[in-house]
Amino acid sequence: MLLKCIFSHKNLHNSKKSTNFAVAMLKNSIMPKIFEYFGFVFFFYSNEHEPIHVHVLHNGCQSIFELIMMNGELVEIRVREKAGEEPLLGKDKKVAEAFIRKYSKNIIAKWVRFFVMKQAVKSTNIKVKL
Image (cartoon, rainbow, N blue to C red; front, side, top):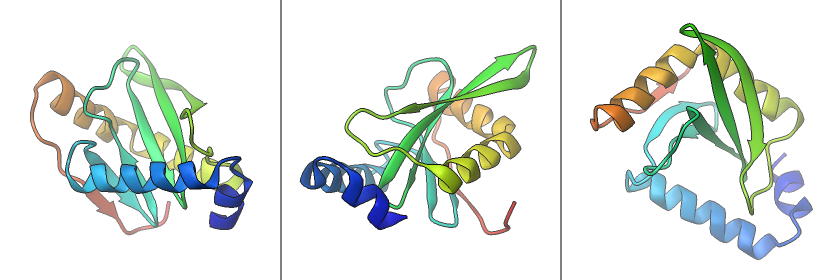
């Protein structure tokens, strides 16, 4: 999948630079990492906006998943592309979405803690397959 994402991208150089930048920002907590799951990294940008959403990075590809809530329950996940990035496709997109469905309450709690309460969030490494 890594080769598919990187080599199908129209601008390979910018894709690598963008991915390297994202990894560096995650390490510096400018983009708080909230979960790791078998090579998938789930994170927020520090200057986010609503709706609640999470960025997912895997094998050099990145997509944004919006969590649509109604009466405190997750009713929909909308996937959109990150400008300048190759999106998650196929199985990777399905894995990320399944993870988000399972951990949606945790993602929302971390969003509220970080963006509303202005508190640090800890990354959780999930080592059990869905």
